[in-house]
Length: 173
Image (cartoon, rainbow, N blue to C red; front, side, top):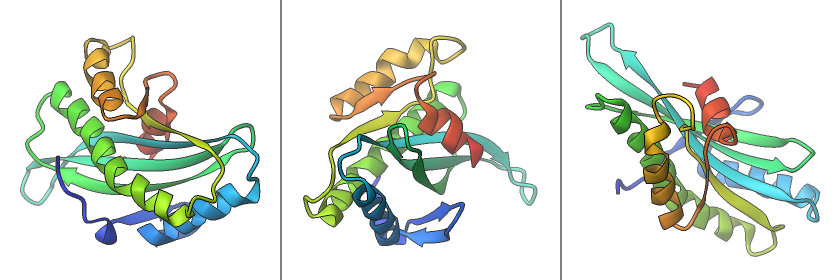
């Protein structure tokens, strides 16, 4: 597993622009506290897109990880960050990179969020959304990546229920 220096991670948000991790946690806390009796989901999902550098002709994968807090039936907020990886050549490597990026991120971000909420938050379901589905080239990989996520202690969602990866993160790749 790669280590993430969460203090150096910058997030983007459509309304608020560039944010640091503690600011994102603060905004999530405020959103949860607005309606403490509501039902929430915390979603982490990553999507990627290959980018070609015009300067030197090399290919990199642009990985966008989205963090969403969804108040069931009443909308939500989301934030995203961007990283780049080299040496990803196949669809399998791409899906593994997306899944591992979400898992690595969750392993660092979720404990910080819990600490930032000080035990005073409403209950929420934590889901990792994976950009694989029963239709298309990724169908053979579903069991593998779902196993990676559930084996790490998280709820895994795949298409069409993986909106965190296949819609939100994809929008910003």
